[in-house]
Amino acid sequence: MKSGKISNNVIRRLPRYLRKLDELNERGVTRISSFELGQQLGLTPSQIRQDFSCFGEFGQQGYGYHVSTLRGQIASILGTDRGYRAVLLGVGNIGHALMDNFCFSEWGFHLAAAFEVNPAIIGSTISGVLVRSMDELGSYLDENHVDVAVLAVPKEAAIPVTKELEAHGIEAIWNFTNVELTEPGSSTLVENVHFSDSLLSLSYFVSERNDERAAHAARAARQ
Amino acid sequence: MKSGKISNNVIRRLPRYLRKLDELNERGVTRISSFELGQQLGLTPSQIRQDFSCFGEFGQQGYGYHVSTLRGQIASILGTDRGYRAVLLGVGNIGHALMDNFCFSEWGFHLAAAFEVNPAIIGSTISGVLVRSMDELGSYLDENHVDVAVLAVPKEAAIPVTKELEAHGIEAIWNFTNVELTEPGSSTLVENVHFSDSLLSLSYFVSERNDERAAHAARAARQ
DNA sequence: TAGATTGTTAATCGATTAACAATC
DNA sequence: TAGATTGTTAATCGATTAACAATC
Image (cartoon, rainbow over all chains, first blue to last red; front, side):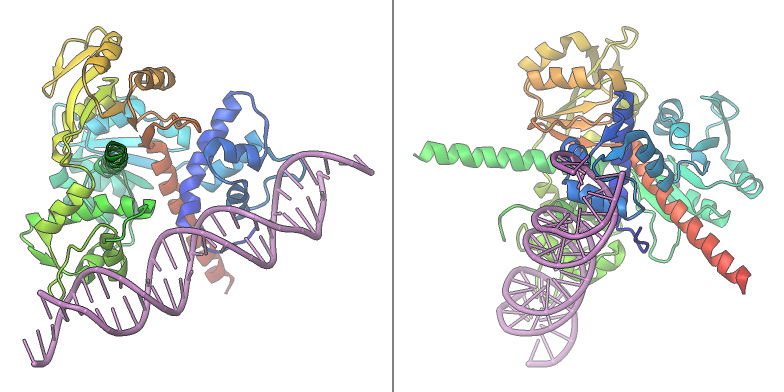
């Protein structure tokens, strides 16, 4: 295993590997080569072997990789066996949807509490998680260890809530607001889920394809 | 302007530029240099100028870039002025949250219809959009031009619904299911919003930081 | 005009791909 | 054993950064 800084590109591919390996496991596939895995993921076998070799030697010459073993190793690299504790801020539509649908425990996370300002929701339990008043946030964080804050509050509240979180020692934020939280000075880890960025990328690719077709049609018409 | 294929990295940065320019506009900033923009986005001025130069000459020597003009140009490159039409599949938690909260029109999209299997929801109107029966999907697509399908159905339905969409001419899918839709053969454009990939990346960075701290503490204790 | 900042060409850096000896 | 496939080193390719002439 080469140690040293792992590149961002490699890290971003790890969850995809994990997903694919889960799928292979479900399909009852026990063994896979970098060649076959590459085929299924649209990557070169070289890249896959390079990626894995950043973390250790998980394969076996002449055989390939044992699916469930490799699955476990990648899951462990990603930290899914560390029992991280999360809290959710803002039980609006998206927050509620996450509580109902997103299986935190599947990825090794424990969602310990949610916080809301709306009194109609405070005190209720959603998917087994108690919704507390946002006023309790500070004292809760002082009394309980929390690794990650899931930020799903309205745009306007994003910055003040982030400040509150940081003031009480939160160092990682999973950000669902469309607000850029990362300040040059801050050491807080922020992972953004910007829906609009994603849709706009797709919009670009659709436009590119449309333009190519229009250009092609124009060429054809000219002849 | 250099024409030719634009790299993926550049395309993924465009929505971030757009977001930042919107923010600058709101703050009343009318002019910005690549240096200042780089500071605010954590990019080098060189990279910003290189990125823009893929599409044209948007700045002015000695002055920089006019914020709202540049904003408009990037928005146009991304296709937000093309009036793309979208339909949403699956009005569960996430689908509902998108309809309620995600402002399609802000990004130039028109959400024309939604489709559901649950009879309790069919026929209702959410944020001005009629929820139709999934049975009508095929005929709707045959009769109406749709550019993008927003896939928010349960895991099990992802593949069959995708097949139905493709059979009726849909060529772009904004995918909120955690299912890998992209088949090697297919020419359908798929943009994935994999929540778990995002959380797992964050989980990795948190773990990396924890490990570094533990190593540091161990070194300190030894001395 | 002088200063500032662009657009672009050249240099550097890093990531991907290819090749191959090691070995199961 | 022979064939297959790994882990890793070397070669290639592409993306980022630096430099600078052009010019507002």
